[in-house]
Image (tube, rainbow, N blue to C red):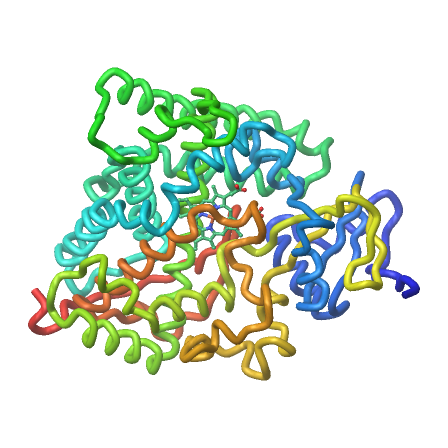
Length: 460
Ligand code: HEM
């Protein structure tokens, strides 16, 4: 088939399409352009060409692992200052990715994640205790509380380390250092190289933050080496002691450090943002809140939550999927072609082109999701709805061998937390007329979204 030209907004001298992207909300700009240009469009940016795929027909073609692979795009390149060859930012050719991936996969499988149930309950209980102490008049800022929660969970479950974010007024310094580095990396990725070179103060600040985070990870490792915990089955023990089943190699101490920071970044921002979005949707759509609470009452009653309950909380799981579909914390992931090829059989691309999977328009394509794609409706996944979706229609957790290794961890963590909250508390919005505003850092969260909670009668 003959190739078709890829539509492109008008370019400007030297700047190309830079003016089409809002540097403080590049994903928002890509959604707006998708509405104008449809399935695919192209942007010329200084030094690179970016091709953005928006609909099922174009995105699904990129998921062919024989022709396309993950590319470390500009944002991920900026993040390498912090995460180096950790799983998230490793180049496809980097040997350390394969070693860490094969060695860690079993811990992130369903059985490995079940072993983390106790740690997750420990931290979730701390949060509920704090909510009781807050009382009914306190505004709980979701982005703050869920960040404390998910940070503490990944710290405890993965490294046996307590950040103790529910025991201090201010979150652990690591939380702020990380937020600053993530925001600055996103900004640097959307600025001209010359502008970045001129921002000497923010660059120095970034280096200082990165060093503080690396130091903390090194201290946790040194502590474990000085005081081994042979009975612990956590990630840190496996990283220090296991061998790659394929090559027999162990993970280097540097690679362990970069994967520790990787798990702390990838493991908290995403889940905390999703929990915020989920509560926003449940509260905006009270029928879905009632349905979720009813499920918890049927499955748990007022008894304790145990691992065997999790798979029965189906509506809650699909409400979480629906929140991720509607707008997840990760807006795009990037690919490039292994050699010259045509996307959807029509659009020519070269290996040097950066190709973006634009998840918001992809997850709202009416050809897949129907006329109510813009409605929050967890029921669409129920009764076999998820299984009946066209292949690869739901990609909130990424794709192929570089898909999210923490998916089972995240799902267990979120279902557990939502179930415990709904079992014990009645939740309402602090401001009932709140409208979603998106807080943009590396990932998305609902900005300035607060809730109030009240113990349910008979549930203390
Ligand atoms: C990769 C989404 C939770 C660890 C990814 C990718 C996506 C994603 C889309 C692929 C990125 C790309 O292709 O560039 C999510 C979402 C989550 C979540 C939506 C929660 C709602 C977690 C958790 C952890 C984690 C809890 C750790 C415990 C990782 C890692 C990678 C990754 C290490 C890189 C994997 C590799 O390339 O080998 N995630 N994630 N994620 N995620 Fe997650």
